Image 1 (spheres, rainbow, N blue to C red):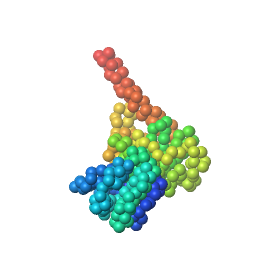
Image 2 (image 1 turned 90 degrees about the horizontal axis):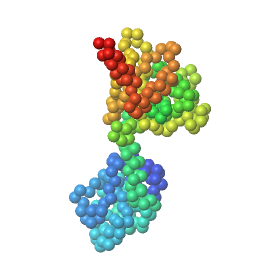
Image 3 (image 1 turned 45 degrees about the vertical axis):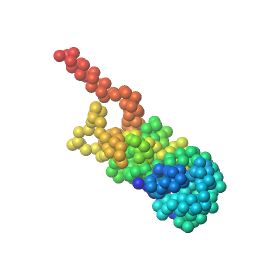
Image 4 (image 1 turned 30 degrees about the horizontal axis):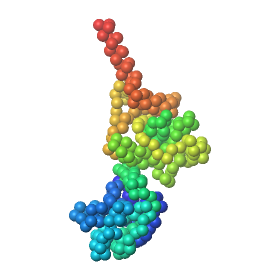
Length: 307
């Protein structure tokens, strides 16, 4: 699970810090956002203090109609030790009671010029992405014909070299060596490269190359949905490899099962072409065209006719 600090939220959305500057390193632990309407009315029994609090025109209009004593009481309860931050939308004027309470409790009080609904949607999407379950995988992620292919295998098996050949053939590199994979939605995984090694590719004997500098901006992507895993392994003559494609293997990654192919590697095999064909075949299967099953059905029909 990722972590988001309030300071990162300020920088990403260009928010204005009004008060509570000592708390800008507080962590936001949930993507849920609270609009404390009931709390403004004095009902704090189920106050979700651990969420980011978003105040819009409706909440502040109601707050302005309260008595001085009520405003002091509500703002004191609103700015709890668990509250990561409070954001006021639309660039609205912020009541002094809220500014004082945020300063006293070190709760960052922020202001945005965006409309409340728009800001809520943007922040929710940002937090869901950053706080999504994540894992780091040793491999190479490439975009081949629109299919996010994760190449895995032992060190030295040829993952990076295959990716380089794919880039030369017009496909795009997402990440090499280390791939960060996040659960972006139900049964949807998105992979990207760590910022430190973004757009870089390591080729043994050649060193580190910058793919975007060498091949142009069209040769790279910052992130891609992972749809298929292709595991490269050194050819084992004692192992039986699937020759028909009827068997479908899956690997569980984060909380999502992904289809997995195993490709044996030996001199003379053009792995880049095989990965291209595997990607196109994966797309055909998604469209309902399964060559192996069609062949199996035709074979069964032929056997029945012979009988």
